[in-house]
Figure 1 (cartoon, rainbow, N blue to C red):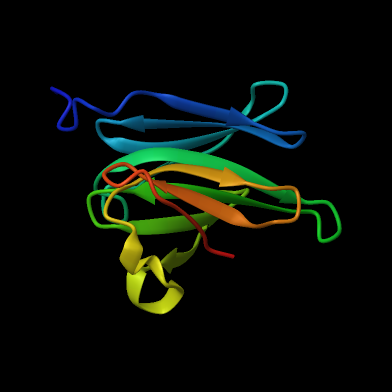
Figure 2 (tube, one colour; figure 1 turned 60 degrees about the vertical axis):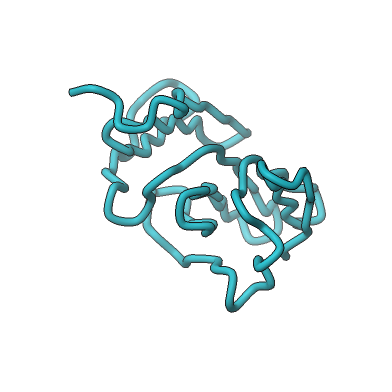
Length: 128
């Protein structure tokens, strides 16, 4: 099957808990243990149209991992837990994303603040 999103490449991220791989045709989120054992593989086509980048945030106090995926086609950020379960959609109406035209990069600081870059305007906005 040809890649419906030629701008999308395989994306990888890792922390002390898991390794994540996101691919784009079809959109699939795969979560692996640090030993390379597949924990979960989920299709995300219904939730993520134009994923462009993602990042992980681990909270050592609560022992929870969150996976943030930019959907720059629909201007949303999708949040998943460490097992690939969908948690929430961070959308422009509820979280002040109206300045973001195409979220293209996402950075998570140790404090937990999420910063999203705008592919069109080169703006950055802290979300959480």
